[in-house]
Amino acid sequence: MNALAQYPIPTWISILFLIAIPLPFVLITLFTHNAAKKINQQAVSKIVILFFILYLLYISVASFNGWFNQVSFPPMVLLCTTFPYGFLLFAVLINTKSYKSILHHTAIEDLVKLHIFRVIGIFFVLLALCNALPKTFAFIAGFGDIITALISIFVAKAIQNKKSYAKTLTLCWNIFGTIDILFTAIAANVLTKISIETGSMGVDSLAMFPFCIIPAFAPPTILLLHWAIFQKMKQKMT
Image 1 (cartoon, one colour):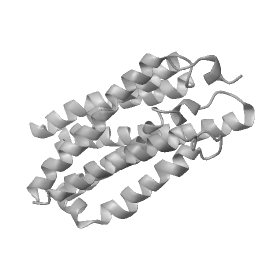
Image 2 (tube, helix red, strand yellow):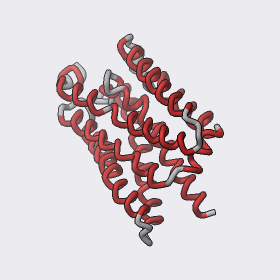
Image 3 (spheres, rainbow, N blue to C red):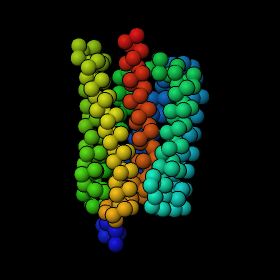
């Protein structure tokens, strides 16, 4: 019997996750709405809202129809959601005029503030505590997200207050946050491969609804936000 069958995820954690997960979508939608107003392209925010609705619907339908249930390497949830979504962001979105214009007219602290939604990383910890995720992986990934989220508040304030250390702090924080999300994504795949080969606990719970929203949405989105901050810092230097 696998670990997930032995230790089912408590319903209250799933309910709490469903209450919390709208946070990143709301924050990004509000950010896009305000940014689009500055460049007089309000239609952009409507497109973002529509995309999020359709994407979440797709994730839900795919999950309930068992698309992510097959144990494979890479996991089906990545093949069906994360990879196509990442391609859309990094091969299409960042090359559009709207993205470039929004980035140009956006204050870097506003991009930093968006990372507050990564407090949702607490759910990695909760899943580990109920034995639904390997503890070492979950604690590193979860607390890494939480630390990134909390420090983002101080980074944004340092930028706004034009502190002498703001640039260095922003760069260090951005590198830390990028490494954290890359670790999470890579480690999840490594654990999946090990789980297939040895039967040890993997990250199967992240392929279950509603937690499948995490791999489907978070890694590409967070990497894009970090990339945008690196781009913004480069603009300021030049």
